[in-house]
Structures are given as structure tokens and as C-alpha cells.
Image 1 (tube, rainbow, N blue to C red):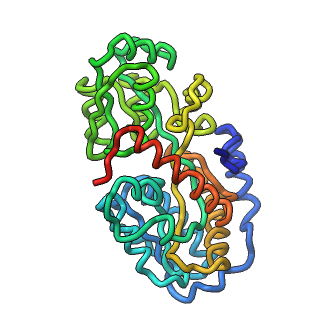
Image 2: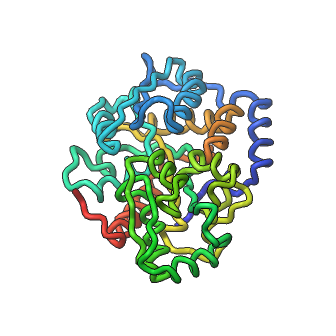
Amino acid sequence: MTYETPLAHYTRRQLLALAAGAAAAGPLWAQQSSFATRPVRIIVPFAAGGATDVITRVLGEHMAKRFGQAVVVDNKPGGGGVIAGEAVTKAPADGMTAMLGTTSVMLSNRYIFKKMPYDPLTDLTPVARVCLAPIALVVTADVPAKTMQEYMGWISANKGKLSYGSYGIGSHGQLACATLSDLAGADMAHVAYKGEAPMIADLLGGQIKMGMGSLLSLKAHIDSGKLRALAVTGPRRVPLLPDTPTFAEAGFTQDALSIVGWLAIAGPKGMSADVARQWAAAANQAVASRDGMARIIAAGFIPVDDDQPEKFARAWAEEGPIWGRLLQAAGVQPT
């Protein structure tokens, strides 16, 4: 599994320098897109105000210049992203509608729900990834483990006594923690929450001792010392938590710990290759802008400003079966 993303190998300081350089250099592409004849719509599977929504709006401002049309953000939360996904698949494939979705919405949902009104892998057209979305393993301050090696010893010594939290059934957090539990023979119980906020509340309240979630949601509590970050998923350290090692650096290279989610743009089935490339060019330009890059980094993500439909399609096809195997191994049954 590879990530063809040059930005994924830069430090935080280098990324910020690149962002400043992008602003100074001005537009990366002079020509406007040819298909946009009216305001363009980007559907977001989450409510307004969340990280995905905020990033969509920032990128949309830059993409509007490329398209020569306003970019309208259309929030369609609910149904684990199925509502938004179905809306995209039912839209005309003329390029006027696309979605900025997550890995769960655009890949793993097909393994979680028995009946879906569409198949993400066949009814959507991959356009481009906007950023990689690693998650972090955190423990409460009273846990005696300060490294992954100490953590594995601690959960092994407390076999059958511990619980870990995640932000939902089939979430990346569940898959990663289940893998660690199996490796240590810890027999930990999974506590699935309806989102990160209630999981973090129980972490801070001491009801659970560990969990996995997004860096943006966890960072303030890590900085305060109430939670301790032990490792992050993905191919490299994350600018928002530069001192926290990746699982691979700590010696854990299993799929659930090395794979990383993403935010990406997809269109309806039948979107032409030319239109998909125009969307990708607009997305890459927006990510490379100073504002776009800075907001993505601040949200705990890793910017991707060089993705093309063909590259994204390969990653999409390669990663789908991996998520399927991980969900099956974790005992997640389609509902």
C-alpha cells in the first residue's frame, strides 16, 4: 500500500513554507474550467461547522475562481453518509455536482450496510483526494503507559478488564484498537459511541481509559495533559502532533495501523474524464493555496495537492478490500 503524495513527506515547517510560497507565486493554472455554466454544488455528508464542512468552504472559495462560478456547499448529514452519497449518485454527471466525502462514506460503508441505495465503488467517479486523515490512540493521564511498548504490556497484563472507545461501529478507531487487542491477547471490549464528543467526554470522566479519534478533537485535551497520545495512523507524523510517532515507527505495521483515511472528491457515475480532471485541477490548486493548506494542517490532516483521478481510482480500488478484511476481522456484521 503506497501513498503517492509528496506533501506527506514534509515537516510542519516545510508545509507552512510551501503554503507561503504558493501564495506568493499566485495562481497555478490560468485557464478556467469549461464545463461550469452555473453555480457548482459540493455535497458534504456532515452538518455545518465540522472539519469537513469548514475545509470544503475554504476550498470552495478558491475553486470558484477556477470554475468561474460560485461553489455552493450543500450539507446532507445522516445515515452514516448514505444520504449524501445517494444524492450525488442521483445527480446529473455533467460536473455541476460532486461530493467531498470520507473513507467511510466512499469505501467502508459498502461493508457495513447490507442494503445501500448505491455502491460507492461503482456508482461514484473518483476525482481527487484533498487530504489524508490520520487518527490517534490516546490514553487517560493515569494510565501507566507512555510508549506503545508499555501500552501493549499494560493491556496484556489486564486481560479482559479494559474497554476502548471509538466514534462508531466499523470506525477506523475500532479496527485499530481491535488489532492491538488481538496482538496483545488483551480481550478488550469495544464501546461504540455516536460520534467523538461523547467518547471524549467518557475519556475525560474516566469511564474508559483509551480510545481513538481525530487529532483536531483530541488535541486540546492532549495539550492540557488530560489525555496522552501514543501513536498515529498513516505513513508519516502529523504536523498537528509532531512529537507523536506513527504506529510504524513504534514497530506496528499491521494494515489497521498503517492505513489512513482521507477526505476526497467524487462525482456521479458517468462523469467524463475531462470534467474529472478539471475538478482535480481545481482541488489541487485550492489545497496548494496558503489558506487551504493552513486550514487543512490546522484541522489535523495532511494536505494532498497533486492527486489525479487515475491515482485516486487506483488507491480506491486497492484500499476497498483492505477495509473489508479489517471490518470482517473485527467482527463487524453488516446491518
